[in-house]
Image (tube, rainbow, N blue to C red; front, side, top):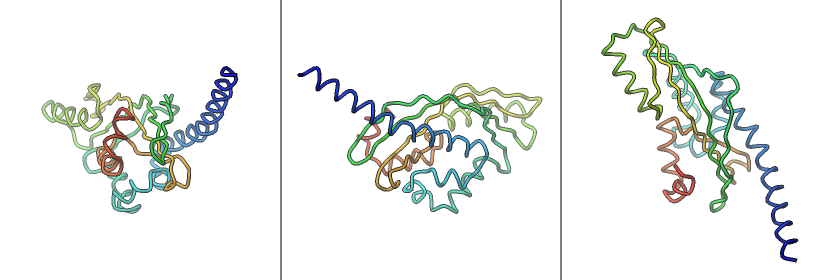
Length: 193
């Protein structure tokens, strides 16, 4: 009898995972594609609603995203067309479900003005800090940096998302800060952040 209960519990948990994992996989690909294509409206639609509020609303968030990708200093482009996502376990914490999604995410930063050796070293350190990586290579002929990093998306599924998966981009310092304001340190600890 005990084995039957364990089997039923295992089947139910597998069914639950399959029902929530499929939409999570689809949504993860959509937000990555939106970033790859610089589709800021889609990024905003797939971002956690309280994050958008924290960053000043959709218009200011779109302006921030545009500035993050292209400004007077550099242009940033993602390099992978089809990333391989690694999905952590879906964790129910309180009334929400969370999942940490990781993937390799090489980016290239093209600088508008020619960088000197000293400027390149300074920019490399900034890129390492901002991108949470140590793997930054300056390419003088292209006046660009190749930034190889492991990115994280924090997926959240709760009532405020109309029970759809919405995201925080853990690569973005502003989004990390918003996550820390919205969710408790205990939740961050449970997610291993």
